[in-house]
Amino acid sequence: MTDNGPVPNSKKTATERPAPERRGELLATAAEVFAAHGYNATTVRRIADEAGLLAGSLYYHFDSKESMLDEILSTFLDELWDGYDAVLAARLGPRETLEALVTESFREIDRHRPAVAIYQRESRHLALQPRFAYLAESQRRFEQAWLGTLRRGAAAGVFRADLDVRLAYRFVRDTVWVAASWYRPGGAHSPEEIARQYLSMVLEGIAVRE
Amino acid sequence: MTDNGPVPNSKKTATERPAPERRGELLATAAEVFAAHGYNATTVRRIADEAGLLAGSLYYHFDSKESMLDEILSTFLDELWDGYDAVLAARLGPRETLEALVTESFREIDRHRPAVAIYQRESRHLALQPRFAYLAESQRRFEQAWLGTLRRGAAAGVFRADLDVRLAYRFVRDTVWVAASWYRPGGAHSPEEIARQYLSMVLEGIAVRE
DNA sequence: TAACCTACCAAACACTTGTTAGGGAAGGAT
DNA sequence: ATCCTTCCCTAACAAGTGTTTGGTAGGTTA
Image 1 (cartoon, each protein chain N blue to C red):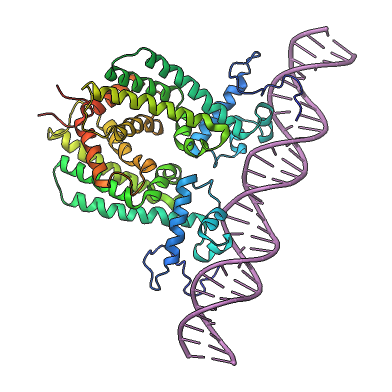
Image 2 (cartoon, rainbow over the protein chains, first blue to last red; image 1 turned 90 degrees about the vertical axis):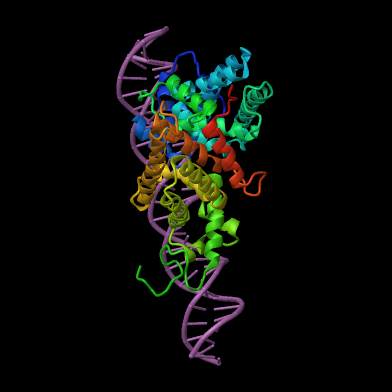
């Protein structure tokens, strides 16, 4: 297990010098299969089949099946937090912040649909493993961002104060992210259009006002 | 493989003559483990451990690991549709039907939380297998009931007509059922209380009206 | 007492799993 | 022509998988 020179599967820097785009292709197909059948139910042979090579050959590019999962999830979360942090740094009002977060979320679903689906399905038990501790950390920041926004809005009289904030948080969070389970890019609606309609439902409700 | 008399694992009748309640206990623990770690990631030895017997002994009660899953899901769906059919048979107005369906759903989550979690996680790919074809059938009826109610409501002027009905359907459906992933019986809120708050959010929205 | 049934154990089975070791073809650099 | 790097294949490994077979302790029935 000695480090014998510059092997392509160094660690987890997505941007490498010689630009191994094959690696990206393999990760994309792996993510697709993971999302479709679940991580545990996916065999490395299945991934290899889908990618057009043999199972053992995957280990030229990656350390292990788990490291593929790791790279898929961490890449997604890094990009997600880039977007979220930009929104939060703008220090908009509660309602505008919520709108921006939801819109940003649907954009991420559009870009990283398989990763989001995997995250939804596996993050809970993965977060217990030390290797995936960043999932728990991410969930913590997640809750903080959304709950804070909702609390600010309730205090400012923008959001209803008669609701259980924690329940509302789960409501909004789940509402947004489960969309990854049915969303297909290139469908009838753009991410922004879906975000608009979701926001309209979450904020105004589906009932007609008298 | 000849049928040698009245073995306890006959088929799938949950109510048997000699009342083998041990079977129910084993199914309950199996459901719990399936829900916590996923079906594929769960080994029969793990289930046996949790239940306090050895892996092979499970096969005295059940034909296979898959038949356990089958019985868990079909039992849940049978009971779910008992409740749904009662609601639909009452032929209430669109809004009252939606309220009743949501409330009934949260009651089912309260009663069958592990089964609901398993269903959420595995139904999509399970439905492709012939053995679990009833999952696809159930989903079809599901969509029909919810979509029909929403359409009736939009036509009657009870629900907003400016929304994509199919999007609203997914919105309501997902909003309700993902609750199974975090709901814990005996928590702060009763199923009815959660249903009330969810309905309030879905119908009226979380924004304050000016 | 003898036969029987229930619910389990002990030990193995065939198979699939992720992973590794060694090798080799193609092509650019020297 | 030689070397090196990249990318893949072949063939196997050990561990873990769902499942089966035969046996048995303890209670119930005849």
